Image 1: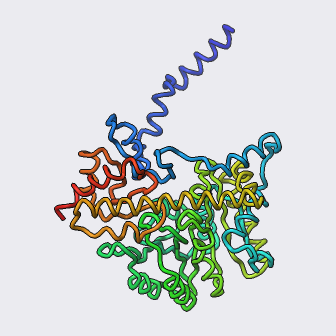
Image 2: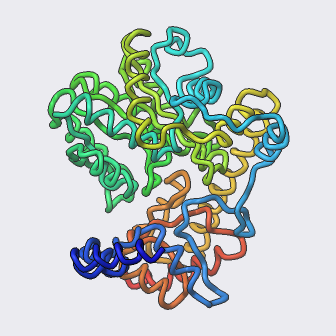
Image 3: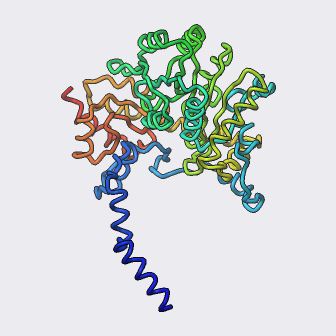
Length: 426
């Protein structure tokens, strides 16, 4: 022992004094600044810190019941009861659950899709919609390194982060029209025409986030036609299938139109909103290929991209999804429950609009009910949103996006009154 201590002392004199771990780490990482707060998650942090009993959170992008409480669907509870004790905890393959993928493809592409029968779709389980987008972005960068992605203005803020970190150059295309609080269809079509042939476009399949503004079926057909002329590649982010209108088939209409027109497409699916599986990170990425051989190759490359990221996707959420969609009775229950969620959101849109009109608001609030899905793009300015927070303890993102899931029969009148107070001078 004495010899080892003496040897250590000699080594220390030769090399100089050892720095305490805290000091050495500080010198190594001292240049690292705190990251900017996420604009969406930061809203919830501020809400939780507010002691006011009147506070209202309409910033969270997660469904709440009419009491403002999180919801676990009964179909999910039943699926978990069936799963409990009947499954091992082994790794899934790199590509994920085959059964979940099969059910996801039927949901997106159609029960009787010829593309599924012909095995033309390369698909892997993904870490919800975010993970599906990131896998595709990395795939795009690796195999089409000179391509770029056109992203709508505005879009979900994380879309920019995903393609930025995958080092794919970004461009934007017109989407939202602030004056009408609806779709800038003319601007959108003009940007599609101006984009170089063969460009990649990110499209929201339904319930556009954050605006709640979707093209009509006829407009989708015109968009598809112009994509065909320009040979553009559409990548659909479908985070709200079933949750938007209450009908998964209707919410997949844009994708079906593009398929009918002969496009190759990519699709990111998420089960966060429509099954309430927010924390399970259950999703699917699919890419329609020329033939089965190409689909096998593309899938193998998607798996190779996933391998150093997270190796294998999680098991439990995949079991829940495949159990629900693979059982006719449970799927029927899910369809009923997802329609119930969509209907409550639609009802709250109507109640908020009517409450504002009854208060004598000089503004038109037709856009509240014209928009669809989780969010209402209210048209309020950042300054008006700041007033809502400061004077009324109402929390939302500063772009005026209202999460309709946070609106209840108990707070809709209070919310309408506050909105009226900060907007009536316009």
